[in-house]
Image (cartoon, rainbow, N blue to C red; front, side):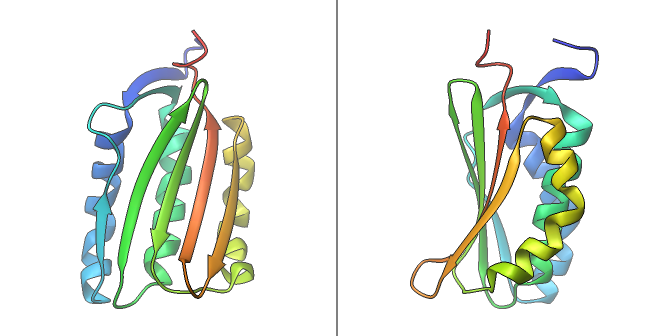
Length: 136
């Protein structure tokens, strides 16, 4: 583990970020739910992770009106997937354009960002990154 990496509770980090974006979501008649397990440890660079997640959540809120945004996560061995979902359809190109500036930060965590959208399933932004907690 390097000096910039630390163990953190992902649920708590997302709660801290959501507090920042909740007022805008409410103004847009939307809500944000943190569906990440209460005790989901990750070992990574907290500042870079917070920057990437903050940007993804901000852009999702900015593109959302009258909807519910759900943030969830799963860890598989040494990889963590974070999903930011909303029930409505967005053009993938519009969302991808909004997160292009932080793709390099995601890559610093050994991660990547992808988006999928369909009229029947809504829109999901997925951020996948290396979780050093699972590598031990």
